[in-house]
Image (cartoon, rainbow, N blue to C red; front, top):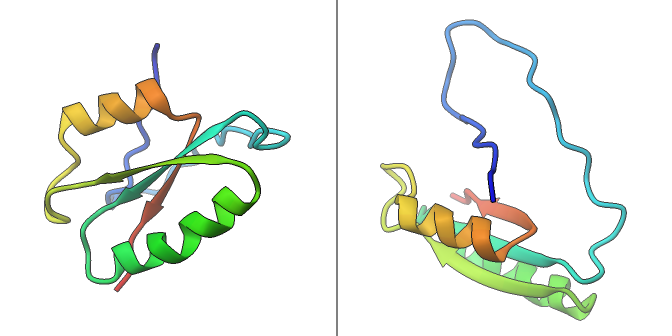
Length: 92
């Protein structure tokens, strides 16, 4: 399976990036919840996860070891192999 990585870091010049359309619905999808390990990001996921699950959608939680570095390749690969959609939490 291939995936397109989006780079969220600052750029010296803005550029228009292709946006993937959302799926028509979440039926049968798995949503990955990725905490970047900033303060309160787990709290945000704890509030969001039951809302997603109440709609009958499966969730899987992931967590970066630290918010100061990109997610390890192993975590990214797990997400790619097991999720259709990802929500990333950056709470402060």
